Image 1 (cartoon, rainbow, N blue to C red):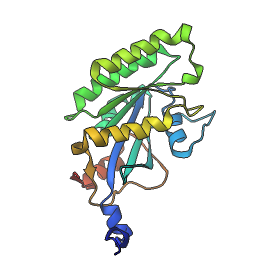
Image 2 (image 1 turned 90 degrees about the horizontal axis):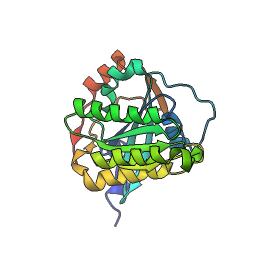
Image 3 (image 1 turned 90 degrees about the vertical axis):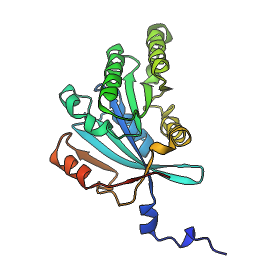
Image 4 (image 1 turned 60 degrees about the horizontal axis):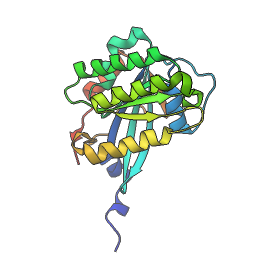
Length: 227
């Protein structure tokens, strides 16, 4: 006997798509875009342009015989966009806060984003603090920074992950394991998309933070919760 799933049209599958929204936050130069590109394409680019506004990426994670559509917003780390970034982490399921292990000031910026998220959301997303560029880690010079980051994560109940976009260390685990954690612990926060998303489905879409396009899209987009 053939299963009903096998006869399901692609349009029906699209309507039943389980969507997870992830936002990347962090100071400029911490490697947010490099982490995303390593995850999406398994590539590392030595020279990468600074993100202007935000880049939108699509990917997927398979877990427990289900496929989860990952809508990933890689936001700019430039301070002039800080006041507009809530457009992207509001209603997100996961917020990934990235700092550079060689730059202590970028860890201070993580604390800034934690406060900003608390001030702008009704339901806290799953927060992950990421220590990136671990390929450059020097225990004598960077151990205290690593410990401090772990303490910040422990204090707010966040996940703490060490990565290197350059070598690929920890990158797949970052995205797959936090997705699994979200599904297992916060399934009620995941919305199942009923209408097809109006976002461009190309691998990368750059959208200016605060542009009228993004606002219009939010007004037109509809979804219903949950499993």
